[in-house]
Length: 150
Image 1 (tube, rainbow, N blue to C red):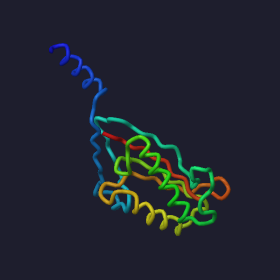
Image 2 (cartoon, one colour):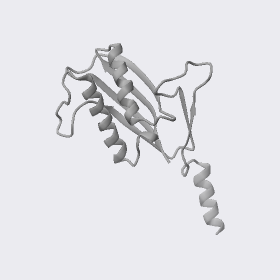
Image 3 (cartoon, rainbow, N blue to C red):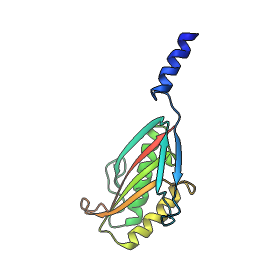
Image 4 (cartoon, rainbow, N blue to C red):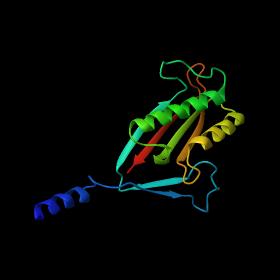
């Protein structure tokens, strides 16, 4: 019995067994965020999932929504949903996203916010960075994510 306790104590003290506890922080000194959280702190991390940038291709490798930013954004979020599900996670597990918008325009940012509000939790959305970039031809959006599961 003593040996079992000793082994468990070793695993807990070395962080090998831990439950993820995410704290979502929006300091009053920063502008109130809309659709994202300024700071996410993960303590006692269980499993960290890194999802590569997803682009608007379906499982057959076909570009979805050529020239249609909204259709591409929806496909990217669907791809993220599949990737999260493949490792036992969902959008409530996401703590950080990076959104890359090709041919950036304020209208595209508005669309991203509308689409992500369908997928992301209303309470405690992940931290997010959005930047305008040059992407591959015909690709208008790419998003990567980091999730922490319990």
